[in-house]
Amino acid sequence: AVTITVPPQSSVTWVNDSEIMFEQAGAGQITFTTGAGVTINTSETLLSQKQYSVCALKRASSDVWTLFGERQLL
Image 1 (tube, rainbow, N blue to C red):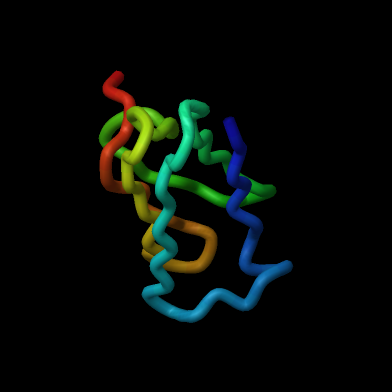
Image 2: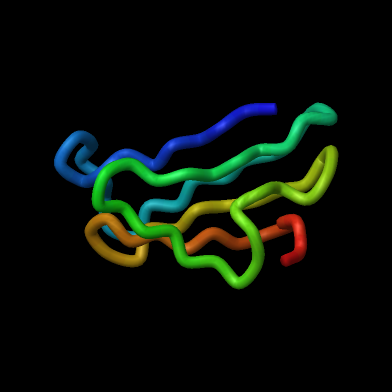
C-alpha cells in the first residue's frame, strides 16, 4: 500500500492541465490525499480499486485536481 499526497501549488509549480497516471502494481491500494489547501474532486473514493487498476489525477486549477479511473466504489 502507498499514500500519494498532492502538494499545494505553492510548493510545486504545476503546469496547467497537468495529468499524472498511477497503476496499482501490487496487492496494496493507492490512497490519494491532499496537502494544505488542495482539493481532490472524485465521484468515488480516494482509493484505487484493485491490483492493476489505473487512476489519474488531472489539474483543474490551482490546488484543485480531479481523480478518475478505476477506484474503489463508495
